[in-house]
Image (cartoon, rainbow, N blue to C red; front, side):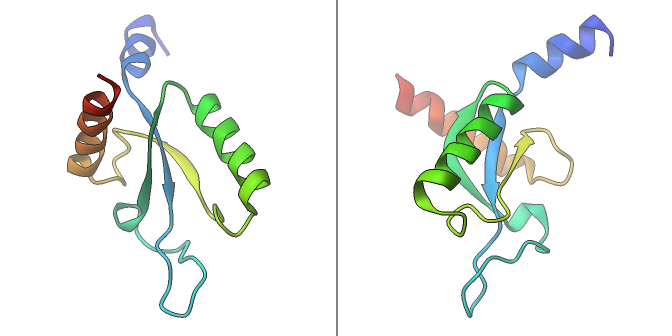
Length: 95
């Protein structure tokens, strides 16, 4: 990775997403990423996101965050409009 790519990645946010809940309970980890729900928090790095996921899994139980994963906001599997809306919502809340 060259310096330009590294700088571009540094400007992107990481988002914790959770698979949708099935009708009978549990999470549908095979659902398309665009259908996953976002935890309303933006992370500066993948490591920060993964640490939060691990901490919350321990604190609230594995079933609460089962299947959760951290994705970068420009992940092609993720719906761009949802990622952009999340980032704007976070900026408004943090002011």
